Amino acid sequence: MATAKTSRTAKNPTEAFEQVTAASTEAVRENIDRGLAAFAEVSAFGKGNVEAWVASATAAQKGFETLSARSVAFSKQAIENHVNATKALMTSKSVQEFVEKQNAYAKTSVEAYVAELSSFTELASGLAKETLAPINERVNAVGTLIQAGAVR
Image (cartoon, rainbow, N blue to C red; front, top):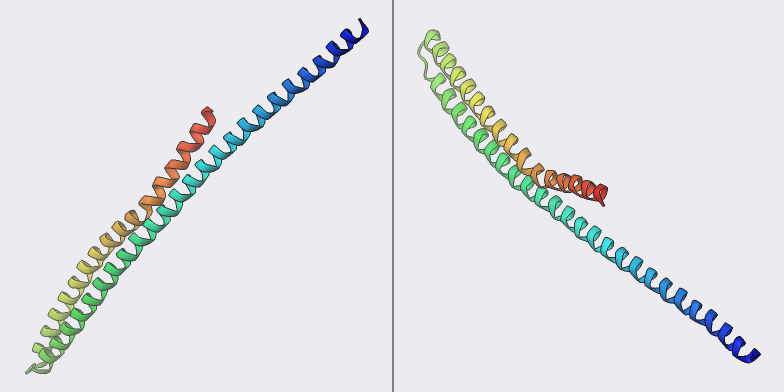
């Protein structure tokens, strides 16, 4: 009778140990799975951030190339206009004619400069919007992720 009782007592702790071990193993697996899922989510989010920065840098590069080409073209045209105006000024037959040509050239130069500056400003504004658009999307994604985390 004592042996039957001893074997039963020995069996219960073994079963209890196996149950605790199984529960612990399951809990560890669940935590590892959640950790891996979170790591995958963070990795994907980080990849999206890098892609946004690359897209932003690409847009900035193209925009700066456009602005640079525009500036060079305007400068070239302004120099050509200046040379032509100088030639025209040198053919003046009187001081009055010289002053009139100089005033006309100054007026057209200022008007061309203001028009180019206005156009350049619009291009630069568009460049800023295009450059910041991918980054703005990522900032919105962070807000969405934070809101989703608060709901969890």
